[in-house]
Image (cartoon, rainbow, N blue to C red):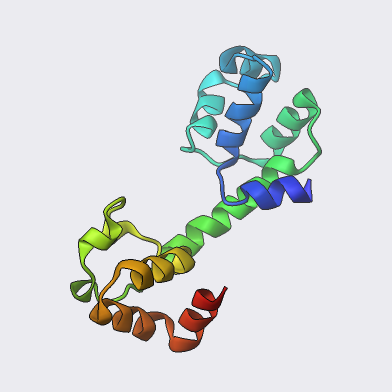
Length: 150
């Protein structure tokens, strides 16, 4: 379980459940009824609009012959990821970064700490001196040098 969890941690357990049901060619509604749950409940979890609870997790794991606690561990990692995203509000001075550097995403929604390796590499490959200086100021010279050396 640890190897699988490390690959998918942070993902909502509902998305993993949906994939599992598709692989087994099980319909969501029929599966929900087979474990005595409302299809709407399972649908909300699969869409990521509702949290997985322990009782439902155990029912699903038993029905699908998945290791006990798998979905609850995923839920815990997802909750941690959500909280980290709430706390990660610090951004570099965006007036010093050209939006064209991040043509493939909205510069205002970048998770600067989570994707710092990609951000640093991109700015140092394509950015000008002012942009590189801002990234060094934001992340610190040691972090930037460590990432560029790897």
